[in-house]
Length: 243
Figure 1 (cartoon, rainbow, N blue to C red):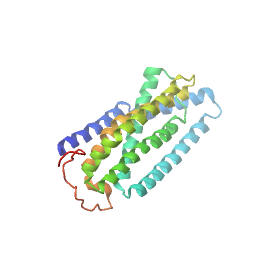
Figure 2: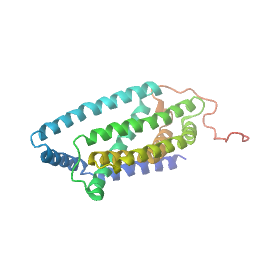
Figure 3: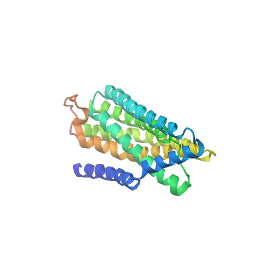
Figure 4: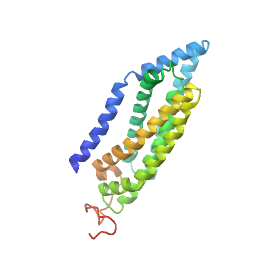
């Protein structure tokens, strides 16, 4: 099982590396798009608009990540688990922004992006993505009081996958509806958030987070030490089946 878990982890990580590298021009593309739009429509305040957007990003992004980390650490009583969750959320955000930049240019033919687009996408995807992570990790922590971390992860993933998948599909469909509006900014937000939510639902929560949790084992709950449980290391048995 250990080799299979490592293959799953590296496959998921490789996916993000390829997605981010393939769209490596994201920063330049969005930056030039913001500049072109601001210069075209707001010639007198283009520079102040960009500066304001950059200032907001530099302030909001670290603040949101710090608050989310603090709340998650208090909930899970761990420092490793929140760091792992935030890492997957940031990777998912980067992949969604990269794919969106290519889609806007090659698929939709948009000539620019609003200066606030990255910040709005960050807020939506972090808030929505962290919800599913907390839901899954809280269930893993609950099961870890009766089982070892690997077994707890299998049980938690099995019992929450249906709910998380259904919620993700509904949420992605809701944001995808913004693509029908005759507003470029709304269409961009709708595509980026819908894609990010689907990526988070079917890749992050289904593969990456459970695989990382199983690979980390009890180190996931550091600095809290999990006491040995009577079911640690035992093979999973379906309810009602003879052991």
